[in-house]
Length: 158
Image 1 (cartoon, rainbow, N blue to C red):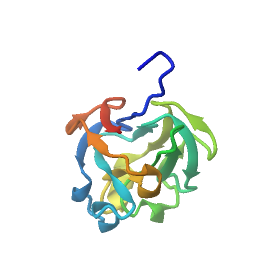
Image 2 (image 1 turned 90 degrees about the vertical axis):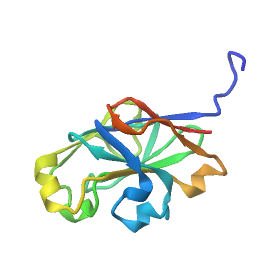
Image 3 (image 1 turned 135 degrees about the vertical axis):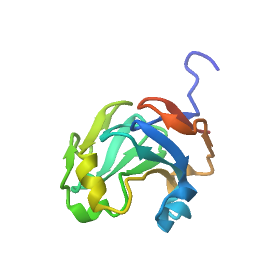
Image 4 (image 1 turned 45 degrees about the vertical axis):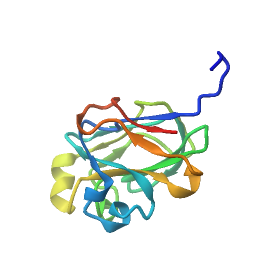
C-alpha cells in the first residue's frame, strides 16, 4: 500500500471501560439475534462513553442513550447504552455532542450516572452494532474480549 493508498479497514475502539461480551449475550433479542446488524457489546465499568470511530454523528437520540456514527467509508455504527434506557427520557445522561457534529476517536459522547441509571433499567449492557445496510458485505473481526479500557482496539471491519 503506497503512501496515498486508501485504508480499506475501519478500526473500532472501546467506547467505555469495562468488559467486551458477545452480542448474542445481550439480554434483548433485537440485538442478540443481530436484527440491527452484527457487532459486539460492552458491560460498562463507569459512565463515560467516547466515540469508538471517527465520523459524523448521524443520530443522537434526545434521551442520550443511543448514537449513530457514520465513518468516511460509509460504515455506520449504532452504540446503544443500556437496555430500555429510552424509557428514562435522558434522566442520568449528560450528552456532550449534537447530531451532525463530527467526532474523532475518544471524543466524549455522554456521561451516564451509572449508579442511578442501572437501578432503573434491566441492564447496562451496551451493544455496538454495525448496521447491516452500511456493511455492504464487509466482515467484522473482533480482536479483543474480556476487560477493556476506553480506546483499546476491539474490532476491525474489513
